[in-house]
Amino acid sequence: MLWALVISAVQILQILLSKTYVKREEMQEVKKDLEKVKKDIESLPTGDQVHELKLELADVRGEIKELRAALVPVNHLAQLLLEQQLNNDSKK
Image (cartoon, rainbow, N blue to C red; front, side, top):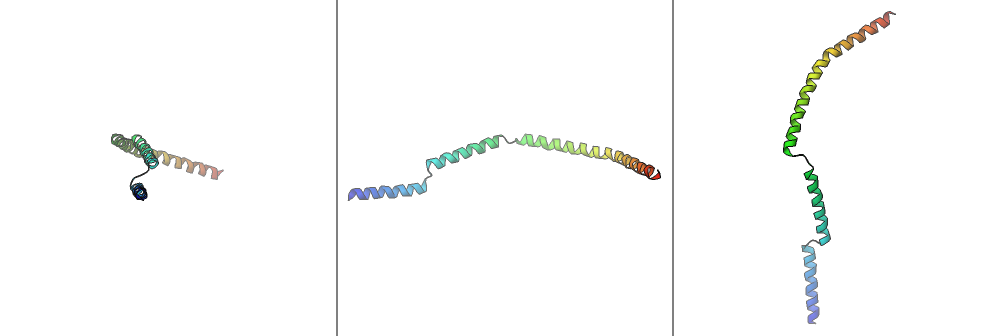
């Protein structure tokens, strides 16, 4: 009878511990996921790299604005040439 009580107590203790502590397989899976996240984070750009990219993007925006301004006269000439061509075609 004493052994039955001891075994029952051990089983109750095992049940309580299994609810309290994570299984080894689950822990290994969490560690594996954590390593994957660490590798992903390591591949991300640093703050300095992000800052550099922001500066370069600002430069590119400025250059695009300059190009847009330079293309306005070209667009105007293209419109005039198209209009002239259409007028010449309508006279024929």
